[in-house]
Amino acid sequence: MQNKTYTRLLQILGIIILLIFTFSFNFKETADSLKKIDFFWIIVFIFFWFAIIFIKAILWKILVKNVAVVEISIVFAMVSVVAGISAGAFFPGRIDVARPLMLKKDYGVPLDTSLSAVIVEKVLFFTSLILVFLFSSLYFISSSYVDLAGLIYFSLLILLLFVFLLITDFKIIRWFFEKVVSIIPFSKRKKKIILNSVKELLKTFKTIKNQKSTVTFSVLFFFLWLIDIVKIYSVFLALNIEIEIELIAFSYFASTVFGLATLIPGGIGVSEVSQSIIIRNIDDSLDINLVNTAILVFRTIYYYTTILLGSVILIAFSSRPNEES
Image 1: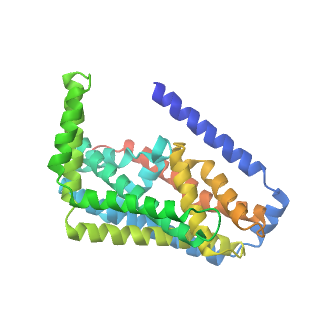
Image 2: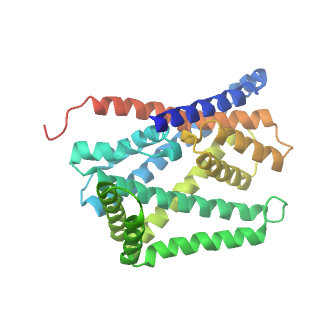
Image 3: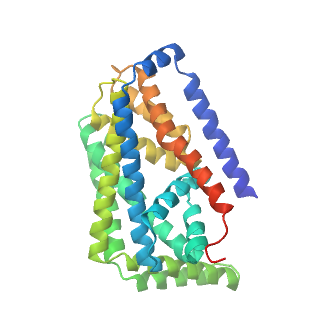
């Protein structure tokens, strides 16, 4: 109950921040800007939206095949991804509970197995996000915004963590968790649940640790982030905003990291505001009202519309009988 209340408060806070951000607009200038929008770039944006959903679906399809030894269709994977984005908008840290439930209902995959796959994907997602954020920061090394030494040290730390996950002996990690759990003052039942969860998670990591999977996931995440940047850049082009794509990349990755760090579901409000502040502080020659309009158009088409679409999918899916019945 407390967790639900905490989540609701975070959601309300995010909505308030988003409303304050929206009401800071000069609505007349925003309306004039939207009248002059170049719809060619909006079509490009929508194309890249589909491309991102498709790549995420491929990632999910591969994970499910490796972890649950189940072959799901690409259409089911795409629908699951959209539903997952919607579900993640209602939980801190964008926790996705929709895909495991859909897998259980349609393919009979146990929840602990599919949840492990989701966690592994999130670990890969967060690791790749930090790496691309740090890489995008290199563009601003000469400015006072970035400490080069700190950036290098932190990058090496993340890389070492990633390498550790790839080459480590999972028996050692399992032994470590068993020792830690044994001294925690929990009941035997809770300890068993924790150890089983850890066992399932490590088993998932082990199944994707082979060289082929590592290369596949690395390439897919690379294209995922590259398309993400081109996608948001196309919105700025649609509104005829002359801005460096490096600044778009840095502000987008930084605002995404900040949005996740605040634990506000979906980064509602904070992602928009933080990206606007970063752009304004780095390039004050830009029309901030126009920049804010581009950011809000991007978030509305890409994120909030996806949430609505995912909600419709979840409602339709929950009312549909099980495949087995």
